[in-house]
Length: 348
Image 1 (cartoon, rainbow, N blue to C red):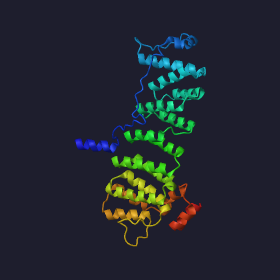
Image 2 (cartoon, one colour; image 1 turned 180 degrees about the horizontal axis):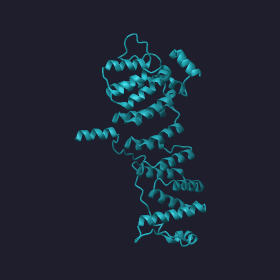
Image 3 (tube, rainbow, N blue to C red; image 1 turned 90 degrees about the vertical axis):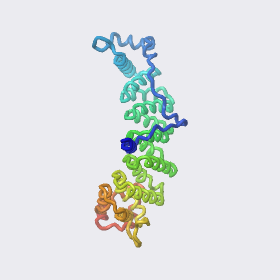
Image 4 (cartoon, helix red, strand yellow; image 1 turned 45 degrees about the vertical axis):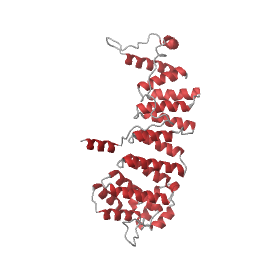
């Protein structure tokens, strides 16, 4: 039973909490400080303007949390309506977010406070990271971090920090989406892309079945293949084929190979010269992959689906090649010796 539990945990992708003193991860928990909220003098002008606003809930007794939520909502609504962007506005938005990390109004008002008060965006990154740590599925927290990077035109070391979050919870889709955006916004060198591949390898060593990791690797190969170069792409592809043969039930890897074969074929239409390639092999990556599957003698659903995808009409299988932003279509047509069907598809 213990072995089964450990296997389930491994396949879930949850490893352990990664720690980093450099980035202060994991961050300190957010603890609401109600001292200013309880100071009536600090809100006397708002209370006077509101008059006899009923904040108590119906019932025989007052529940502190419900009353506080009402008080925060009323104060923040007043500050927004009077267009006050101040330290107490920032404070009340903090409380509102800590009470409900998905409070879009509080996040939006906080953005306005930051812009009007010209606050250091780095401090706001720290706040948003702490919220995301406690509420990892809060879409608003991730969007706020994205806004801060976009507004400041810098990633605030977020590309490195989000790796810590993903390494702790490799199936956090909000974190993956955020890292993909950071890549598109700030990454433009081979060294940076190689670091991403290194991170992908690290995660796959722990959970080779993680579909999100394979999806991210496909994104890297598709978007940044021109930076990696043909040699690196082919080496990665051959390594992934070997991984497929070692984990033949891996549906995620099967789908990845089915999709990225067209990408590899576009830049390297020749034989891969694998051990399973027969002498005189004249095929491209797809034929080499099919040969490797046949040579393994293993039959699984994942492998059958992969073979089916590779054996589809060339026009359907290779269309991804011509969606690559860095591929010269004329060169691909020539190198792949596309048949009339594919030529017609591209021309149309």
